[in-house]
Structures are given as C-alpha cells and as structure tokens.
Length: 224
Image 1 (spheres, rainbow, N blue to C red):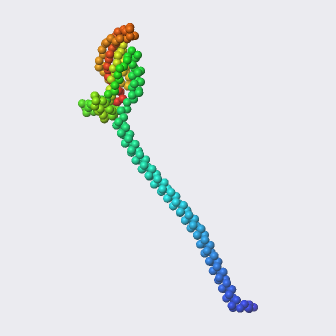
Image 2: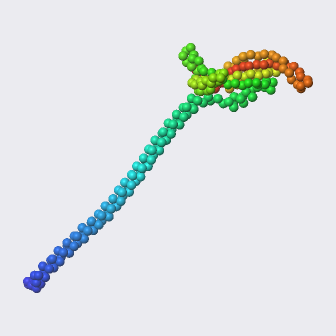
Image 3: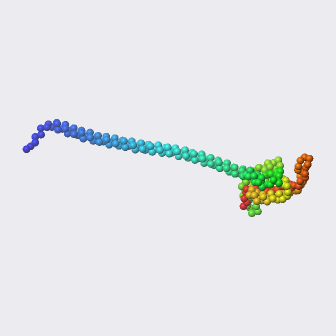
C-alpha cells in the first residue's frame, strides 16, 4: 500500500527552513554561551594578573624603600664609624675617678698629699723596633706656658707629693702602689725629713715629718 503525501511542497520547504533556523539559533546560542564563559574566565585571569602586577609594584616600591633605607643606614654607619675612630684617637681612656678612688684607698691617714698631677709621656721606640702598644691615644700636656697635644701611643705618669708622718709610711705607700692594679713602675724622686709646727697658736709643737715626691705609671696599657 503506498502512502499518499498530502502536504504541499511549500509547507515542507517552510518547515525545513524553520528547522535550519532553529539549528542556527542553537549553534549561535552555544557560541554565545562559550563566549560568555570564556569572557568570565578571561576576566578572572586578567583580574588575577592585575592583582599580581599590583603586588609586584608594591613589592618593588618596598624594595626601593628598603634599598634607600639601607643606603641611609650605610652612610650613617660610615659616619658613626668615622666619629668612633676620631673618639678612639682623642680619648685618653683614663678612669680618673677610679684612679683617685684607688689613691684614697691606698693612702693612710698619716699621709697628706699636696699635689697630684697627671702627665702624658710619648712611648719611645725599642731597640728591636717594637713599640709598646698603648690603650691611650691623645692627651693635652702643658709644659710652662706652651700647650702641646700628644697623639699616637702615649701613657700617663702620676706625680704625688706630700707629707708623711714617718719615712716608713712613704715606703709602705710605694709598696701599695706597686701591688695595685692601677699603677706600675713606682719611682721615688726624693724623701726629706723635716720639722713641722702643730698645735694652737700659743702652744705650737715641732713634730718630725717626711716630705716626699714620687711618680709612677698608670697600668692601663700593655707592653709587647
């Protein structure tokens, strides 16, 4: 039995045309969907890239600031080092308070000091060519009316002059100075017995005493 197609030809063509349109619309919709998805993905990639680039710029600025700070710190350190070197060259490194406290501890009540003087002495070259390595650098020394600035390796002498009740007190003081870690090479310059007056104005008594003068070196340097 044969089927009889009663649909007109124009209807069939119109239907095929509509199906073609639907296929095209569907393909265009798929393409649009892919484009939208790709656009969102590309936007996310671009946003991440921009964020990474901003982080790089921020890190670069921080590095530039760190480099600038490091350069400033380096310059400051160099300046401070120069100042420290200058201080090392000009600081005599004498603990005057410690030296005077040691003297007050060593000197008995039977000794009265009249004068305590610190003098700077330049180190002299040894026959072997070696010089004493001093912890002292620079000091002002007055000789008469002229003021001399000694630089380089210098050491200090201490001159003590006064009156003792007896000559044995002077000898005891010399032994104490030799045993003290503050002093070394004690040299007595002179010791002279004399009579001194003591007592009230109307009743003065002549007492025996010993006038002395001695010198020594401060022991804050090391000889090599």
